[in-house]
Length: 155
Ligand code: FES
Image (cartoon, rainbow, N blue to C red):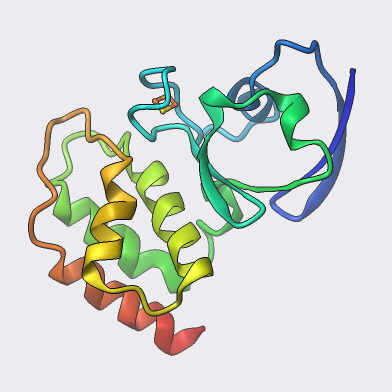
């Protein structure tokens, strides 16, 4: 079947089998930030933004994003406004591997699209859907909140 969508603001048309998941479509297109993890909608490694909402791409079929706008971490990774947020997250999880960082970034970016001034509790909620496979705990969010303030100043 043919699916038309936008990936990081580029219109694409792809021919996919009906069973192809969104994560497999994105990785086949070279969006390696979209990571395989639990494959069960539990860990957030595969998170992408679809029409403004963070979704687990392992739990979506490619056909379900027909006509939609998909944003992966690659869509904003080179934007320097987000560097401090990435660094804050890397410090937060006391980086061992960084596997979870793109999913966390995507979750926070989706939150900021919905609410540019989220309270800390909402940021915590957004990150709850992301599991750090190194088992870091997400306790002190002060650096993350500071990074969000910086982004907000440059919106
Ligand atoms: Fe999709 Fe874990 S791989 S939520």
